[in-house]
Length: 114
Image 1 (cartoon, rainbow, N blue to C red):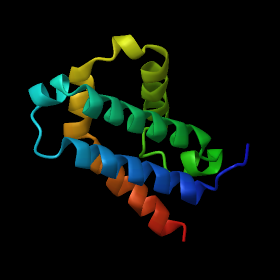
Image 2: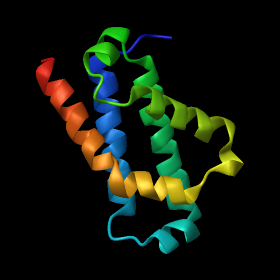
Image 3: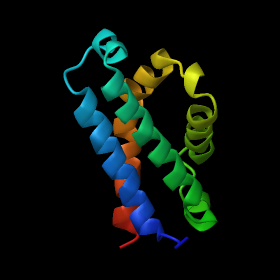
Image 4: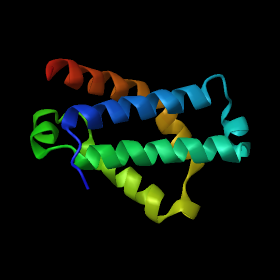
């Protein structure tokens, strides 16, 4: 398996956040819960975010400790290993309260490492 550079992994995170935001734009939590295809797509993109975060170099993770890397990776692991136990309330809360902040932090990291 080829190793992706930190730059590409960070861009993968941004791309997945953009997709989640696109898939959930103007959607209520109740409508989200009822839309299996959209829910599956969002969960898949959270998996990608966590996997990309996990593959980032230790240098990036150490340098940018304002990003909660362990929580992101841990969330990905919960999704992958406990798929039937996904708490949609937590998922929706992250979408509503944390994604935009993460996107800004990741964008700053990309800009600072060009």
